[in-house]
Image: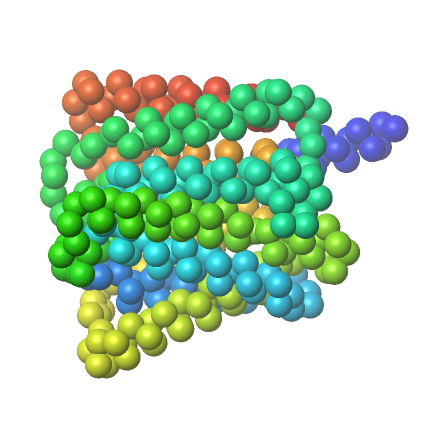
Length: 337
């Protein structure tokens, strides 16, 4: 019994450490590209996803080449679809509203997949479900609060862009979206943002289905390479399509290649730790923590390093968002202790 208890404590410890690493890297991974132009973002996302694929291969080598899982590849492709949708979303309804909607969709779908056992997954219970549900609701509230934090100086490449890039990239070119009337733009943008959030929120479901149905390893990290392959193939497909539509004249910024690669490696580390956290903690604990925590880290970069978040109003919203996030994470963590 003592050995089992020790093992359970170790598993929880590993899970929360993985959460912490994921939060830090998701909140930091776009700092390397902050000062660089990314154009319409399509070339940048391909560089980002190329680095993700390479990092996934390194993980595959470390794990001694576990079997490739096609269903996990589907999960990566779904994430890539969500990422590409953020391009028109930013033009249709802006960064703040788009971020809140796809973040909430991501959080709701990820948590619900585990809590209710959606799409054939096994429902994941906790010792104190009421605490877990309360933490989930507070996590949603914190997501909304971060929307009200604005950079003091409205300059290109501000840190709000960096925060948004946790799941997307900057868009600066004009598009057909700007020629829609305001009502149509808002409706289409909201629908696309919710769809993107769904794509983000279900990207772990295919590999988890394999785990729940004994179709592969019980360790989430063994699905990383398959998942990242799906991301890279999807990214390459969309980039090739983009080049074709633009008559082989893509908007390319060479200066963003190395920073973009570094950003991709950091994102891949965070996502790999997300897999580890899902293994040891389950979706209902890891998702709310990792979905909301990066906002705290990104905002700290903006306040302490880049000095772009200033003013009493911003600080009050930040304090509120930080406080709600901390309480949410505490409740979620306690729900299974």
